[in-house]
Length: 131
Image (cartoon, rainbow, N blue to C red; front, side, top):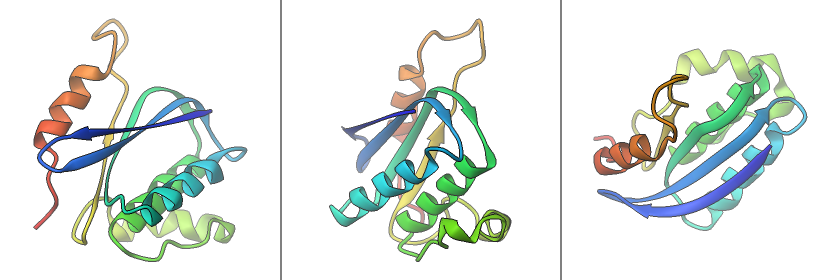
C-alpha cells in the first residue's frame, strides 16, 4: 500500500490521506502511524481518499477506527488488542463530536467516474466540523 498526504482548503483546512493498493494486516499499522504523525503536527480534519484502494481487511477497519478516535481527541485502543479494538467500532461512531473530523471518500462504481477528484472536491466544499 502507498500512502500519500496532501492539504486542501475547504470550509476548513483539510488533510487528505490517499491510499493506493491493499490495506490489510501487513500494513495497517503504517496508516495508524501516519495518522499519529499528522495529529502531532496539528492536523485535526482528515479526509481519507479510498479511490485507489483495491482491498481492505478487518485490520484496515481497525486503522480507520483508530484515526477517527484520534481526530476526535480520544485515545485510540492499541491495535495489539485485536478484535476487541474492532468491536469497539460499533459503539463509538466515526465522525461525531470532538475537535476534529474524519471523512471517507470511497472509490466510484466501475464504469462511472474515472477518478475520485470530483467526489473529493464535493467533500472539501462540504467539510465542516461537527457541532
